[in-house]
Amino acid sequence: MRLFKIIICLCICLLINKQSYSQNKVIASYLSKSDTLLINSEKIVIPRRVIIPDHNRLQFAGAIGCISAGFGYNIGKRYEITFMLGLENDFFGGSKESIVTTSIKNTFNLFHPFKINNNLSFIPTAGISINWGFTNNTFNSLPSHYPDSYYFQNKIHAAPFIGGKIRYDLNIKNCYKRAIELYFELGSLDAYIIECVRNDYVGINDIMNLAIGISIYFE
Amino acid sequence: MKKILYSLLTILFLYGCHDIIEYSPYQVKVDKSDKSQNARNLSSLDKYNSTEFKSFKIALFGDTHTFYDDFNDIVKELNKRNDYDFIINMGDITLSGIYREFKWYSDIINKLDKPVITIIGNHDCLSNGEYVFNEMFGPTNFTFEYNNCKFVIFDDIIWEKDIEDPDFDWFNDNLKNDKNYKHIIPFSHIPPWDEQFSYGNEMAYNYFLDKNNIKYSFHGHTHNFAIKQPYLDRLGSVTYVTTEAANDRGYLVLTIEKDDIKVERVNF
Image (cartoon, rainbow over all chains, first blue to last red):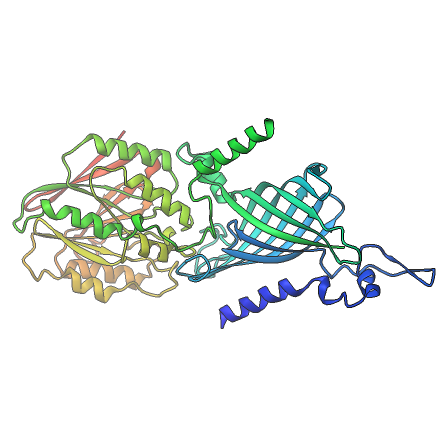
């Protein structure tokens, strides 16, 4: 039953995009970033619908599950916020106990895109994710049978990362899809970084993890 | 040219990373080479084991948590001497029971020349730790025999497992001297006077030891070295020994003799 719920959530994440709404051009532009519409050479200003996401993502690994999917918004040119839901269980990833992770991923585009050719460009990124791990015996606040501050919470982790993405611009007319990006992120976790700082034994190469993903951006 | 150099350096770095593809910090996914280490280490003891009693020594340390540098030094110190037969770790091998902490611990104990028996601690039961422990080391309650002595390894974690009582029925059954053992020695992470034990559980623990004529009980958890008989005024004269944590840079050596067990503390 739990697995069924997770699959439903993943499907919803994947389906919430503009494709579902872009039956015709008017609606497509209505949902677009530009807030004005030209109908019979009259300019109509329509309030922007923010609830419909600007991009969807599918990711492999990266400490938030074997596979994870999500949606997000582009705020300004530099900042993107993405809400991800990841899953690891016996089938996805081979863990004996299933783990569901939700993550708020804050990505910053560090520089202007390096143009490779007309459509292709490379953008270095960095950011920090806040991950909630849902599995056995994780807690935000201590269960009542413990004395005060017996343990530190073990549910939320901060995960800084650096990475890059290769962007392919789709210059197709009347298409709601703007670009497809392949990205990778080299990340770590607060708990690992603390051990790396405290101990010589734990090196930088012991605390890194790699995420690979694809995102689709909408016009 | 620069781009190629950067790419090559990145690839080299990624190649040098351990567990670079990580699905979750809480994962219960143990490499084949790390599985069932307690059973494997016990079977490597078989060739030295005899059915007749003879005096022998074992080393004891505990609460290594994430004091990896101090822990590494303990391993080096223990590898310098050769007069003991095996090692028992008194538990708390991680800080928050996540996979990489278990993996780091496993990598360090595999540098030891002598076999190690690992006991579960309360920190090892956080998140999915208990399941990782079961995969990596095996069951948490078990016994083994060595030179006509019986070692009873007892899992007495209560709060982290969200249970009322430890499995005292199993404990009592296994403390019975049914095969004419010279010694029966219980080991568990939490000593009975700890706040995790209710007063009833504390008395029950001591009662089972006294009833079965056990002389010594060994524990970790307190991060303090102590030898004491706290229940002299209530029941019996069982001696309780607790080990210090790895950052105190020390270990214990037990000499198991015909009539008694001697405890020697080594600090460096």
